[in-house]
Image (cartoon, rainbow, N blue to C red; front, side, top):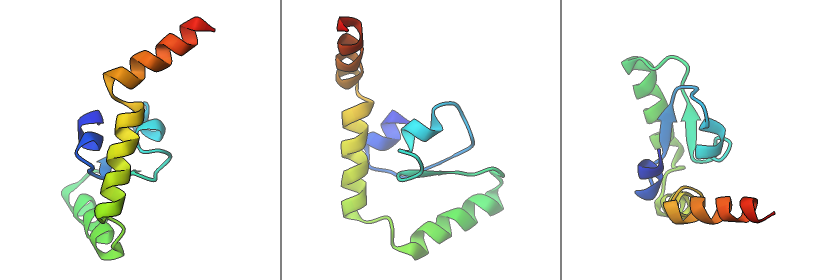
Length: 84
């Protein structure tokens, strides 16, 4: 998932651990319960039709990924928690 965010891509995933964090509570991705080809294509078409995915959102996704899921940000957060 961090690599997906790094490139500014929207996430489609099943309900796995950490999905709320990685998608920023659904802002940068969507949980798909039935991950069949038909359901996946419907969700993808809905995303395309909504015009939600644009350059601005892709940059937002990249920034979110860089802020929360790079090694540097993870180590900084861990260092802050250890220092408390």
